[in-house]
Length: 348
Image 1: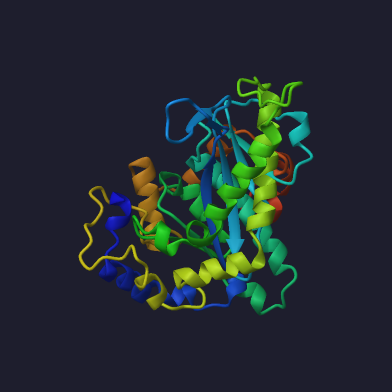
Image 2: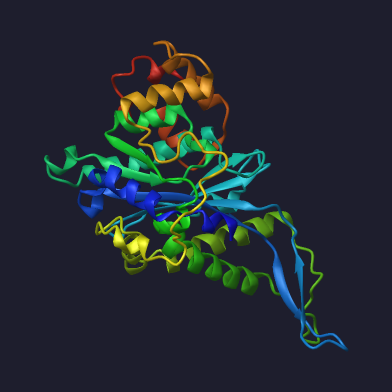
């Protein structure tokens, strides 16, 4: 509870007073993105003699996965992204699933994967704009994220800015109050994931007894985890749940009193011991963008850095099902046509 006890009421008020103009737009232009960890642990009720209650045993046969969700305040979503740890090739059975697949050694989000995500988000925004009238198509979109270190990516911020998308980072230690995904989506999503995963992995012997020590093939278990996550997203990310989540945070409709009424708000909260640079900032602001580059690379930005950093980012991460094959190598020059030479970059 230490993380939640640091939410100061004045901090929340200051955030809304300084950032309210970013929320003063129609709900179809406001989005929230966040990651959630998925584990292959299964819980069983084990009846034991001499105990007053059953003992729960846990078993994990596969490293965690990271699921990345995006919701819009109008109740719509975009395709989830799944981060697979320690994978160099994508399993054939995963290719048909409706998700973006990327990898990292740890299975966690990093700044290169965040860059890939931003390209996916840009594609979704451009798709939405293609269905709008000429005036709405010029309205900036707002992407709300937490202060994870992966957000400190000049390349990702520059891409978003180029497509008229504003990136707003929430204040530190407030995501359980101000982030719609944390407030209203991830709890039912994780409960549904656990239910679906447990149902899919239970095995019985010929006598009808549950086989607790059943050893799954890693490939089978990975597919079950991903499929359970995607099915849980479909059940949890409904238009009603999404709209209620944004409403509970006070972001849309704009209402500062909603988060201030949270039971986690205290009168004199303790500020974070180690403040994060990206917290409580609009990273796509031109002045902040220059600071992002300085923080990331330790030196002032030069003109040629834009091209070099894009190449390094593309070579430093593997992505499947649209991330590179359908977007970076084929469509990047369409997304950002003024960047001469990008269309000549071919990924291996």
